[in-house]
Image (cartoon, rainbow, N blue to C red; front, side):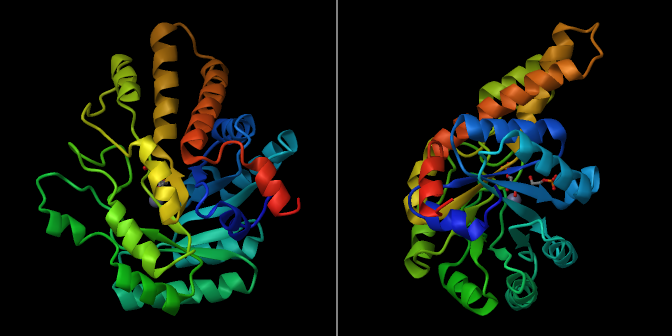
Length: 317
Ligand code: G3H
Ligand code: 13P
Ligand code: ZN
């Protein structure tokens, strides 16, 4: 059942983080539903502009509706990931999305506010909620001085002004993560002091952590052993840090890259070990189960595993 993102956030805030997973194709969609049912977890299914371009918005919608028929116990929200204004309006008007993200974080503060405000007005009129972004997600390197790297993090006072002026419902904050496989070097990690400072000024307001893949070294090693050429120093967020971020208001955790690594590992190993094969349904089937197990594992770390009965009860579903 599709619920609103706000409903999920209300149940989750301070208790667990809702995993927000990107989908692009049938195998990912089925694996995602399967993994969430396997772990009894609510989830956010998110669709990027790249996914809409690759598979088509209508194709994605049809796949999701078909997956729901197969997994009727699922409770989830549908979210547009990193939208521009035009894609936000298209998603809002489609009536299919629970929430949209307007990402104008590359614009100056006032422009970001103005764009977000316009999207909020259109979205709220249709019961859709809005995630916005403030700050710059970027690779935080060890050789950059702390002051310099902190300059990219979300400013807590600006966050308050931004939320008040834009009317957004949740905020993606820059707290040390970045997108993709190459995030940190050495001992860099999440800036908990910054998350706490934002929460102190915005109590009970859902914060969103982008770039939350952990890029497991074992996964990178297996991909490279099967012919891949990923940088072996690739490193992401320590999954054991999620539990510390939850009481600080991090309510949505975005994970995409790790799922791509699962796909790459399964397919590279399959064709390395069975070079005579060309039936893609065989590795596809292995991938669906591997992706489901991956989702279930992440949900354990996000503390969303086992929360479906709580969600059902609190939302009277
Ligand atoms: O943050 C971006 C997501 O990982 C989606 O990536 O735009 O390549 O689909 P994409
Ligand atoms: P990763 O690249 O760390 O998976 O982040 C995904 C994300 O933030 C999607 O919005
Ligand atoms: Zn993101």
